[in-house]
Image 1 (tube, rainbow, N blue to C red):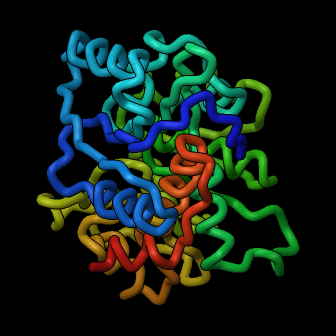
Image 2: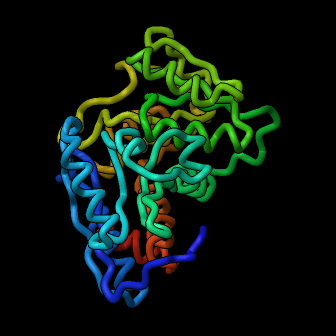
Image 3: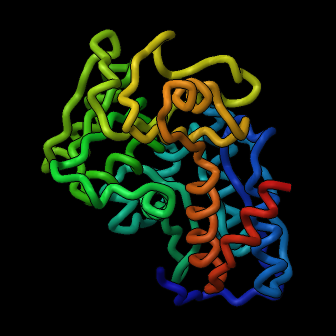
Length: 284
């Protein structure tokens, strides 16, 4: 992760673009990172509605002016911001989605730390090294978060299948990864029991709609499978509860949130914050 910063402010002003943002843990995590690294600064939430193009433009202008030193990007703006940036890193370009924005040499750069954050947390928690055959993953969703997960898994040698309710979004994702063997299945043809890893990359199950799940009721899972729900609020989603009830290993995306946040923080400040302190901040 590059730390060749062009800005060395006495106080870092950071934040998150998305909508809605009421339950975000990012302010706690990044405030803890600033403190742990001995830096002054703050982290603000910028709730911008999906159709508020002027709001996005105005906020990015503040980054250009040096008033804001770094932004995270979440649903629904991971692709919306791309036309407003000067450059994308190779990773963000390959994924077709941005979750981190910063200024370098007067250029507004879009990066993506989600893919590395997801894969790092997945491998930290689960061991797939004993698989004799190519491991298979089913990704639920085809938005910005799904793109990062697909990119990470394809480049790690997985067989990947996606399913999404919006066929047009699925087709756009397939076009992005045209050089890879990426499979698609219709939601009505879903057979989750045939996969080694299932990743929920949709917002289904997120607070306040905690009784929803991206899977059909009574869906049968492979007991040896790992279930990874990118949703981290609540701490135990309906998908995770249902999966554990079937004997599966399951986790929410809190670890990924912390890992991608730490990687973004390093891009903004040049400092690598201790993960354990960030996790404690999120837990508390």
